[in-house]
Image 1: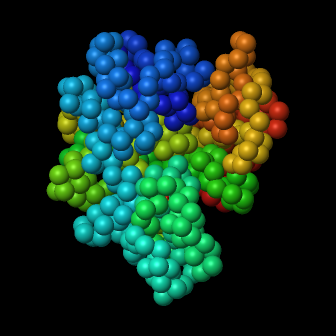
Image 2: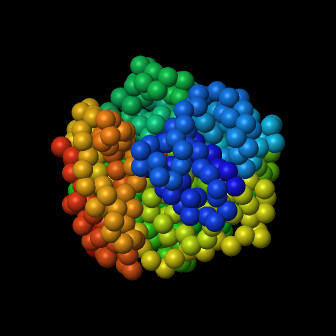
Length: 422
Ligand SMILES: Nc1ncnc2c1ncn2[C@@H]1O[C@H](COP(=O)(O)OP(=O)(O)OP(=O)(O)O)[C@@H](O)[C@H]1O
Ligand SMILES: [Mg+2]
């Protein structure tokens, strides 16, 4: 089989790495990819937002399955274009991807179908938003409605912060059209976990729960990032809670989307807030998480190509999805300065030595090749994943590998998986 993967970050490296293990695969193209994938796939440049050209490439190269990594193309309708051409593709249509692309749609869907989530109000003018904030008081959460590259949410601990967020989003149009509406939410207390699931629109099969680390510094301090590390399975989602999540969140959500004429297939990502036996949805994403993918896929023992084809073809009920009983930890190595500004083009050394260890994979995120060397080209540069017999062992092995990799001003957290080990 011939596969095309869309995207070029750590998540896509993990996807390509896992897809390449399938005996079914003869060739993988990745657009645009990154240097970490060069021994697994052919990196190509395709016009990212011109889906007709991407589909034309898929037809010309006789691609059997296309896998979309990031949310942007899903929300903009790449799956619709591929389906119109009769091409197999893993991911939801634009109508279904609205569960990530529009937080107001997602909240209204959950409300209508009694899926547990925080109380909320949708506002399309700033006066109404501010009045609601004054009525409810802090802490309170303000979210831009549309896609904002993970930056559109303010968890306001004071009323003043919440009002400023409204001015930024609706007054200064910080996120453009994505901020035309805001969702104002009740603040939820608890521990977060991510539960990703495979679905063909009827059947939904959860993966292993993961937990990521959004803040830049140890102890969950400092500004938010795209994610500084992750581990799986996350013990906070016990077997009992996972079952509860399947019955009260995942199955009802898939049924709701189908009932609304927005049948969803692909990977559904549920961001969860867990407090005791209470479990609520923080958000849905329409794709794999980054860096959750880098710890979940290394624990998948089944063939990812078969699963993805089954999701695209509606035959997931006939497909095995099996997991290893091991644990995985991923430590993100970032450019010093990230998530603010940082230098690029710094030479990275020690990659081969780190990769050589048993159970270790170095996923590339922000790297490029320059004069035969791999150099930094982004905020999050690498995700170093280790698989071990326990979280503690996987963590130790991940940090042994991290110690072998060097670039100037590298920053990484030393406490990945701390909640599982406390
Ligand atoms: N109601 C809430 N109560 C407490 N914290 C919240 C709430 N909603 C969101 N958060 C916090 O803000 C973070 C980001 O919120 P959310 O996941 O909705 O935004 P996002 O920008 O879509 O994130 P992502 O980039 O992961 O898709 C959450 O992971 C959580 O830590
Ligand atoms: Mg999101």
